[in-house]
Length: 65
Image: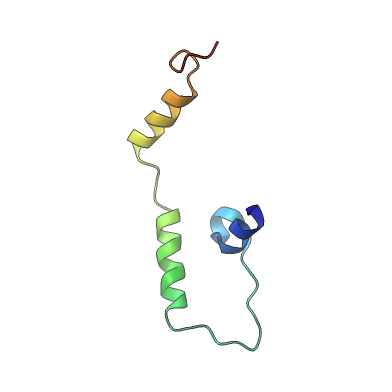
């Protein structure tokens, strides 16, 4: 599955894009879908989500020693 993520992932985030298939035309919507995906990937993580992740990682709050 990790290989699938590399093929689909943003060039900026994953550092890899799936190679273009030669001889096949892209559908008209492909560039728009890629732009939408890239804009979502580039959005910053909300502070509330960062706080939640920090609380989950804090061993004193989740009962771990």
